[in-house]
Length: 119
Image 1 (cartoon, rainbow, N blue to C red):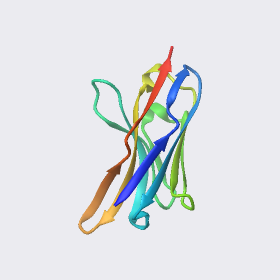
Image 2: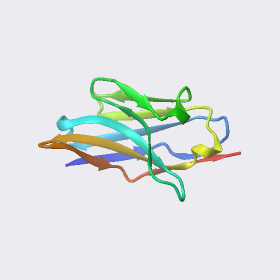
Image 3: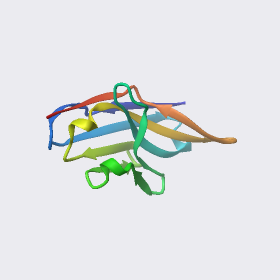
Image 4: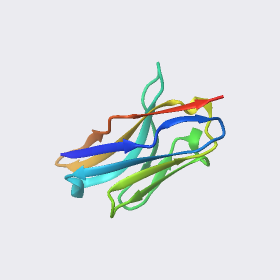
């Protein structure tokens, strides 16, 4: 079992910045990729950014150049630095961790943290 605890959401004006953190605990030795998803009202949950255990990253096109994902393996924590925020970035942001299991991957989720960007 893996537990994920998120922090850092809040209200910010357009153009501002926020930093999200997600600390993992439990059976963390089996975690491969970690990432952030978001879900806005009436929309499907989408991948925002992810980082593998080896440090490879990927981003959704809409946040490239504005958001940076990083991972501190010593602290079992993943971060999302969000800059030049736009109202369309408003959503609940969920931390995700993928555990390598027999036959594939298993997803763990955090409880979600609200990010609201005002215009």
